[in-house]
Length: 99
Image (cartoon, rainbow, N blue to C red):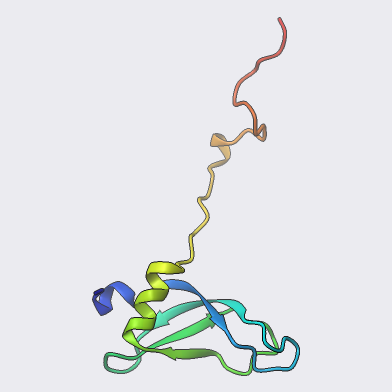
């Protein structure tokens, strides 16, 4: 079982039932950040850049739902490459021209 401090502030992917008739029956994957504006065991997952037609800004999660989201669907941050580390050639990092 994760502690609340390990869950708060985590970014996760949530599958949300759409509130509109645009996508009936299809779940939409939305990125969210977990916060805890009230006492445990409730957490609030605020959507990050949701579709414009979403009417809500987030959803309430139980401790178990928040824990499962952090463990199973975390948002993986892209590793930022330094400019000097990447020369634009995906196959080689050296000069293998015929000499």
